[in-house]
Length: 248
Image (cartoon, rainbow, N blue to C red; front, side, top):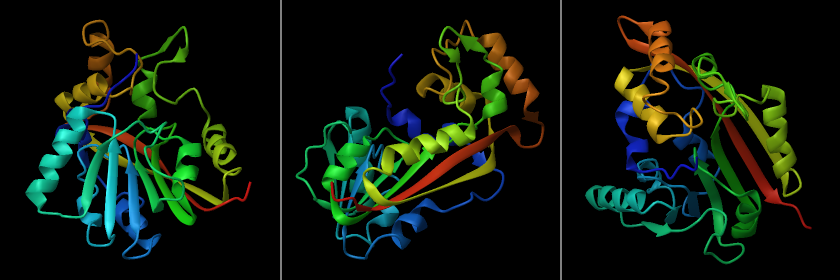
């Protein structure tokens, strides 16, 4: 199944409530690794809620997304926020509509991206900041949904953590002089509605079917339920920082 993310992906219900502090603040990571007054491209910008706090740091921000629904929601949020230096463009991350060496910073915050396209559009001394789902994200929860003919149904859990992180080094090292990756974990509480939205509107579980998988869903919710706060699941993210294009 191919997922086309909609604005539902940015719902507060689906994001849940963090039980403890995240290992990094993504806004701070982007700001601390970019010059004030420079240009930013965000790939897979979604509803652009992550871009609004960055508007005062960059001279111009360009967000791209392949979903028309996301673009409409992003433009509505930008208009409500009265931010003037963010523009949203309909584009595929595999074929970005920009000239070579166009941006000082490129970000991708939990969306699809193409390493060669990022390397093409970023300036030679630019910075890339990517936050991506880790292979152990909601691992115990995902495992309950078992396997199909392609292996574990849970997104990315066919990898070991070492293999998973190494795959990103292998992808980016030929393109950038410096690549650093760190991973982090934290707990998030969800309602049953929030988890159901997560499974329906994201590829967390391959080919999730609300009817066929109902028993797995209820078992998972009951197993991780905390009476006071909701259903507790462990989040896992990796943060990638790449800089300085290699001269090929």
